[in-house]
Length: 381
Image 1 (tube, rainbow, N blue to C red):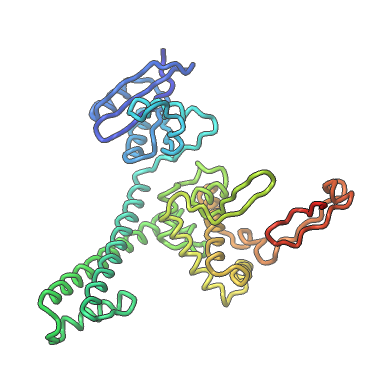
Image 2: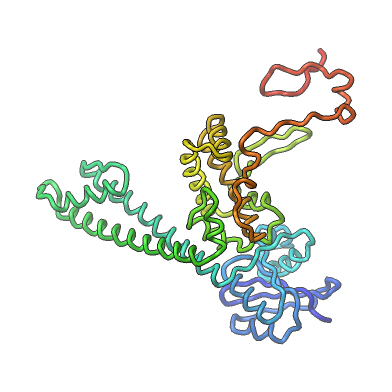
């Protein structure tokens, strides 16, 4: 029997394989060590190989693709419903093999080396930013215990720390001076390394034509552009921009029961880092739209006055995510007139023809309730 589909449960050292033929019958159950994986697949005829999109999956996807196999990466939460029985390596491999055979399964696009390099720079910079924040909070807390309150911001913290080290105040103990000096030195080093990573990301952005096209969008800068390219590449795994927005979690959730739908806050699914960058970019664009009169700025100002700056920033992040997907998917240049053609004025609700109106409207509907929390018709008592 010829193998047509193989599910791989990958790890650091042990790999479990589960293969089926064209009829779905199990023809392979095998455990391999890391050193034998490529040797085993090199002896097979080209087939489909699937694995969870976890640590090391993109490396194995590139290696197996070079051997002529078609690789499918499946999100872990899409595999879990197909696990039969207790969780173990064999059941996980069988679940991956079954999940990748579903006709409506959505797969993850394997990343290239350039995408992983770009994403690694973002991860390193994000870690330094978190370390800087944690160190600054620790310094503030320690100084507060000695009666020294530092204003908000990194600049006041550096200034106060330098003044304390230069002063001859005898109320400062030698231990406190040593801690402040060491923490200030670490803070300067972390900021220098974060700035270096920032410059490297900006250089990579200037060298990538896709990133430069994304930077033309208001609210998308070098960080957001490179993060988008590193995350989705050309965006071919998404059918449209709405799917990409839902993947990022910047669309509202909803709960439906019977004939009633309740709209909820945004779902916050997907990459928190990418969603944060887009929303922060939206905040800067909302602030900059105060003195502008283009269609997008009028839409943002109207939405800000109606729902607040936060809602306007998230709405712009949602719109920018869809625009970014279209630019990456079709390789087009950003055209503001087309992207925001309907943003300058509220959409007019088209009248429904009489023949398409519900029967209740034609025969005389019952009066509506005045309760704002219930929009259904009043029942006769």
